[in-house]
Image 1 (cartoon, rainbow, N blue to C red):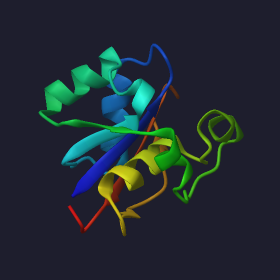
Image 2: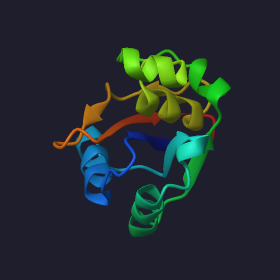
Image 3: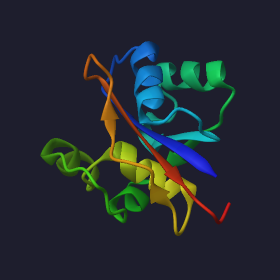
Length: 120
């Protein structure tokens, strides 16, 4: 399973989320983010446009992930260095690996990272 983890600011446009996913590597079987962001309108619109499910990741699952990137702001909010990377890893399952560090949309409102898992 290949999962695109997404982090985004409130009010981020759908285009920014899409751009971040494309910059991260594009193809995914699902989108994932923190549980309290999983029903955000922009994410739901992207999921519908891409015909992908959205996987909701609990805070404890995010905090258990080792990320390649570190953001003090994200660490204070989510207990992990990168919401996008942690969500991708957690949703892709045990043994998942990132294909690269998170990337940003040009406007800076969204990040994405893709993880590949073997157990799902």
